[in-house]
Amino acid sequence: MNEDLGHGPRLTDEEYERRVIELYRGLPPVPTREQDRRIRRQELELAIDHRLGQDFPRERRDALWAIQQRVERRRSWLMLRHLARWLMPGGVSRGANRLAGYLVDEYAKELNAAELQAFFGDK
Image (cartoon, rainbow, N blue to C red; front, side, top):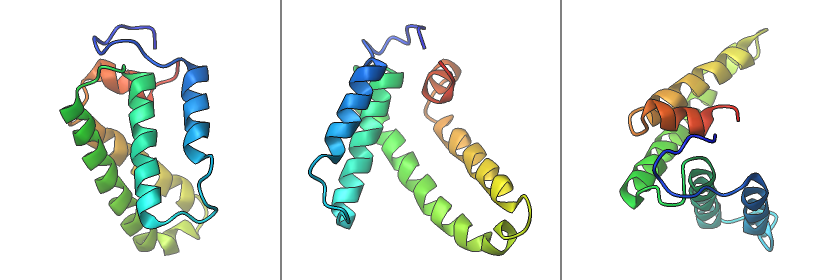
């Protein structure tokens, strides 16, 4: 995570964790659909600031948000489609791996290899 990606300073681990916690303070136990959407967008913004840099371009942030929404819709659809398979031994693991692969493939449409590594890779 130390590689300079050219997107400005990154949030530290501590700052990132503190800001995520702040997002959830005062949130009702069952947030509205709009509150949930807003929180998920803010979480993505913080993840970008932490993993890629605080100057990551707005239009690319918007593209990642669109990807995240597509992945979320697909995740819901895949859960329904594979429910029967998931009940079989190893089905949950296969489904999770398939979804993770889809997620990385979608993000790879917007992020270069170094950015993908910084966003999804281990520190």
